[in-house]
Image (cartoon, rainbow, N blue to C red):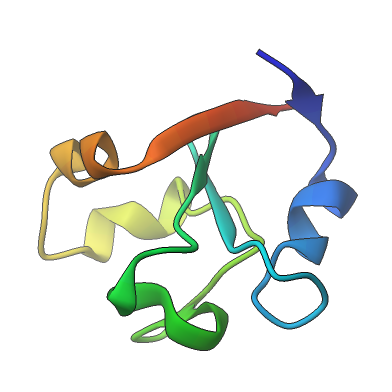
Length: 75
């Protein structure tokens, strides 16, 4: 799996590039097609970031990431 830097992830925030990516536990997921991530925002969370630490406050479990394609690793 390709390794991406935090800077490369940050560009996929729904504003700077058409892709919308988020990272969780070192894996980067493409959430571009999700209606929950329109314009790079999901409630108080922003795309282009590692959401691992923020996930504890989420109302869902880690299985939510099974819906999305893992496209790389956060390096």
